[in-house]
Length: 452
Image 1 (cartoon, rainbow, N blue to C red):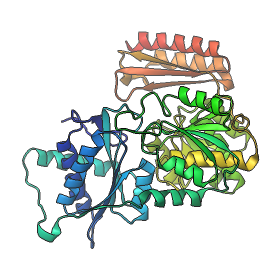
Image 2: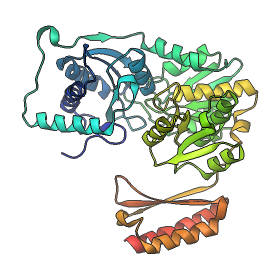
Image 3: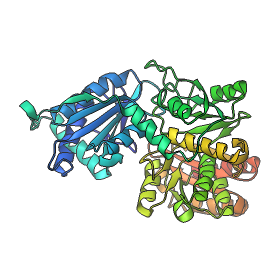
Image 4: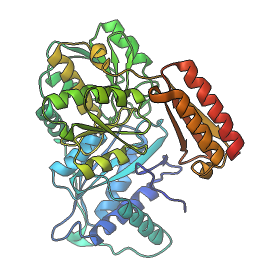
């Protein structure tokens, strides 16, 4: 059996890779492993289980709930809610673990299982590895120690989750949104009720698209991975701007009143300045990944804000934030973490904070996002090469050094091995798009010749 847990839980095609049997078995294993680790010591364990609207989430939720209850865990079913809502409720309700069923921005046939520890935090890698090992051991025949009688878990629907989560968001908002017309693209996903409710309560005039999930249409031509519908709707309705989420609403991208995209880097820049003004940006520092545009770094330097960069993945951003006590971090893709109020990327919270800044300043989002100039970025994937030698090839090292000298302080080179495919990603940023293309093309040729 290959490794099941990736960087964001277990994912695959539902009912092919991710079956009901796998979901049930992993849930039982998670209950046993957390019990062995002392997470349930002295009390009857409780789990919060939520999902996005995918059709497959219905049977997978049933399997997860059955597995947990059969292992003696009481289950609170919160239904269709965003990942950050499930994380929040796991902490707010004092639950011992949380489970979210979603494949985020992936197409409808996929689904995923993400386990959360007490407080709504992602499980440590060691615990995930132990869950996988215990699952595999019992999958091949070792019997479970099963409770009976009053020892089995009880299952309860917790219908207050949406209102409780929205109330939490309202408590975080620094000011109201009265006078703003905002278009929300919910990707036919988990925030289809939550996000419009939150923005409306905050005082905004809301126009929604992609807010009619039927179990089959999640992320289908809409949401944060398909912004054309939102761009058109913002212009058509004369809105101040638009917000787009993905299927589980842990991402937020935006579109200004002209229909131009505002990405995660620009959103972080706007929110960073607002947080610093309120004294909430600890150490005057923002955490991003190495894939963030160089324009973010240059903008933060100009504004006197430090930018710390991590490996690609919001988990690495979060780890750095927790280790050093930073308050804001995220990714270009729209995962933005405001650690004082969320344990994961929260698309609805991010959108609300962005809107609050527009309302507070009276400036357009286009003007606010102009604090950062996105430098042209070219990405070339070079397949069928020995990616393990990226860091050791002398020929490649020399080529990168030459490219960096050519670009100077207004450009950047990043070579990165794919984590899942036999290819190397060549990324070049420069003040001029033609220069970026030229440098990237030359580097890609060297990658082929040196590592092919």
